[in-house]
Image (cartoon, rainbow, N blue to C red; front, side):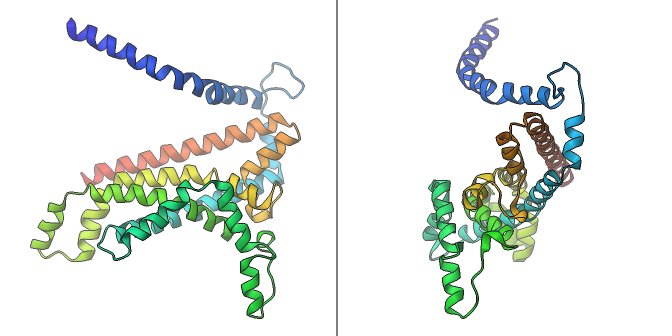
Length: 289
């Protein structure tokens, strides 16, 4: 009986501590998203009927198709590159490297720099009168309007990787340092090669960390709108016109129904990706066990 009362008391205290965060989450995220779902199925004329007209208009819209395709390809290209580079850097920093401390500071630095400052640096590099074009001009090559050419997609991928690689390296380093050292000692006694230890020990025990890094990287790829908007504005080159650009433009034109439908579709896609990642991670873990 005493344990039951103690559990109830602890549960009540936990509710009180969680209440402010839950209220804020409900007011600024949960309720607005529920309203968006309702609006996306609502009648444009303000009726009470349920219609799929807004979703049909989205799928036949050329601008939405372009934004969805760009977002899909950006995630498909940038996330594997980010995960691979951050894992390689973490493996390097986990060794006894001469400049290890300097490299750690260099990778973590983008985490504490505001996004606006980061974008300003990249503008200086790739502006028409920037450092990149000055270097090309000194070599006798013509100037390139980077953000209004096919190179714009590559630049956004580089910005995304540079901004997020430090966080992923920290996660991978934490995962590497949690691997028991005796596993490597036993592998050395058995004469295991470096590649065998890498694939048989390191990658296996990094599975939960890798899953977390991939999940955070996928979610971060859908938030690259800030960097693109600050670099190229509301109407960038076709290669970097993302879903958030489409929704931002629908908001400016007060087309709330299409905005809500696009937001709901984006949320459904993110949820499906997360569920798929969880299933893959669960199957892989059960296979390894």
